[in-house]
Figure (cartoon, one colour):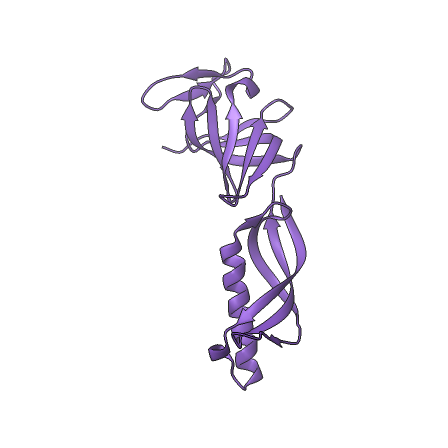
Length: 180
C-alpha cells in the first residue's frame, strides 16, 4: 500500500534560473524537484509517487559543458503507493461489465474483479447493472468493496499499474452501499 522511500535524483537548473542568493537557488531546486516528481507519476519498483515528504540533502552543483545548466544531486524522502500480491485493500466500483467490475483504489483505476473471483454473486443486467448474491448483498457502481490482490503489473507506456483482485476469503466483499 503506502511505502516511505528515500531517493537520490539529479535536478537540472537552467543557467538563466541561477541566482547569487543561496535561498533563491534552494527554492529553484525544490520547485524543480517537485515538478520532476509530479511528472514522473510512477515507477515499477516503487509504485505511484504520492508526496515528497522531506528534502534530506542538496549536493554540490556541477556545470554541464555545452548548456551551462547546473546539475544538483538531491536526496529526499517520499511517499509512494503500490499494490502487493496478497494485500487486502478497499476500492470503489467504477464500472460494471457482464464479466466483472473495475474498481478504483488510491491512484490505481484499473483494478479488475472478475465474476469468477466473486463466487456467490450473479450478474443482473439492466440500465444500472449490478452483481447480487442470494443474501441480497449488492455490488453496484460507487460501492466500496474489500478485496485481496491476486496479481499486479506495471505498464511502462502508461506509467500505470493494473491489478486483478478477488473476493475469495473471509471478510471480503461490499462494505458500504452506493448512495443514490
